[in-house]
Length: 437
Image 1 (cartoon, rainbow, N blue to C red):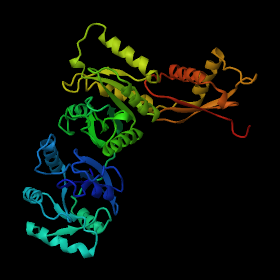
Image 2 (cartoon, rainbow, N blue to C red; image 1 turned 135 degrees about the vertical axis):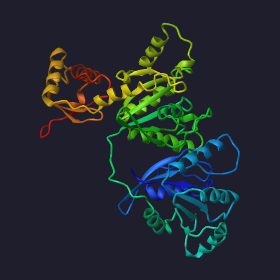
Image 3 (cartoon, rainbow, N blue to C red; image 1 turned 90 degrees about the vertical axis):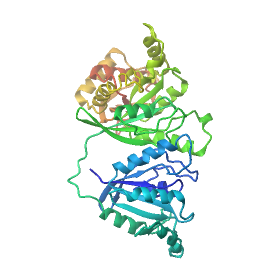
Image 4 (cartoon, helix red, strand yellow; image 1 turned 120 degrees about the vertical axis):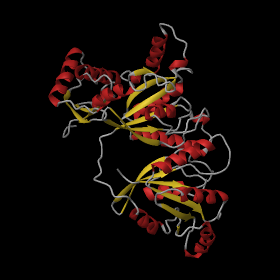
């Protein structure tokens, strides 16, 4: 396993900027508003050939608000999980009572702890370091995460403290994105799966701002679960930080194999649920529709059929996606999701032989020929699979732009029927045969 390095500190000292600088990414949201990072945020980093996992945490402070207790709990859990801890302080503001509290707390930790003063932008500002020595710290590092001043020396020393480990194993993980509107129960679902409060859960919409990764094993299979910020309608997105979160949610879908689209059954299927499902479909994700909070629904013998019919009518483009009713709060049918995930993923990575594929297309054309194009017959020369995840096919045609979308839909349905790929998205493209006009 990679060493885990956790960054702690009070709000707005530059933890997320440091995280981005070391992981060479923009994964952590950075803003001048204190308290932007509420959850723990994980990212992989590599330095001189040494790889490790860096954890960004919410800011530690004495301010009492709706999230303060949960944020502090998250910090303590992150410290407990860590191999090495970094306390980051602010060289511009100087020592604060919260810095003193953190130093006192970390003195009892029997793990390597590195103390760094951020926002020291050059040699001329090194004098700001002196007051931090009053905290009784033997070795302080001065750096600027934003300008990378002192960063190399700090990370060089950091990686020397890593515990020795055996050869790293890289499991074949199914990457699962958990998406949906704010407050539909995405974080509650992941917490139920993991069996602990890995993510902050609150009735306040928009609690999760970053995309958070968690690794989970069940029945010998390894899964990467990605919780994302709730995706609101564009008209309701006003704060800049919310816009960043939505962009990150959409980018998280780009790296998912399967999207669990969580819908609040109590509120019913909304237009925004379908829009979010469309985002996942456009990015080629396998999809599973989860009607959450099913335990809160007053039901009769026809309730499930009503919901399923509404979903299928609203999202005809997802006619392949399984639909499940669950309760993240009670755990009802939550673990059964993984049976669907395994089935969808098996189809999602399927490859079909060229011979079988062309026989399916030929039989489809014999049953239903394509329409004429300017009085000429549209000819399909051959079809081949060019990739999986999702299964993607290209047909070489004499007039590719003349193939009507309804005939394309017909061919996709014929491929589904002939290959039993009934739970995965399928992509089909038309191309001219090379060397011919």
